[in-house]
Image (cartoon, rainbow, N blue to C red; front, side, top):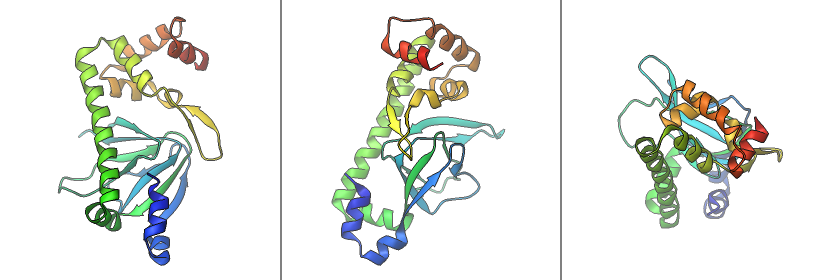
Length: 207
């Protein structure tokens, strides 16, 4: 579903203009971070971002990589403190939607409701599978599983094509796989010496 196009067809022109905006972020910029609480949700048009949170000591923790029309933001369905951040890890184009309008449409428009439910379930399934891999796979398999999951070429604003694993730091990979950075570093170096697997070849070529 092209959410932007759909809204342009069902909303009055003035409301669409006021509630829906396109914006670019440079690599390294934050879409949002605490203590600010965004009153918008963001749909990823091109490029990719990571979302995460903070420990009580203030350390940032990445828990997902977002791309390909996924929607993120503070939907405010509970009263917990909002401590999520979203950071561009490539140049990024997003569409922002007014939060109140977005929540109203989810409730009252069955087409949007179904689209949003599928999107949320897809992300939930992805994160559950990642959690299962932490408990069922050995360290090397965990890293390979993540690389397979993110083995996608995407386009950034301006048409530049990038491979998602190239955007991840060792810290990101360690947090997404439940491993130490030292272990991740050793595994990545070993992958660069392996030539039997296509993803290993690609990783070797790019590092």
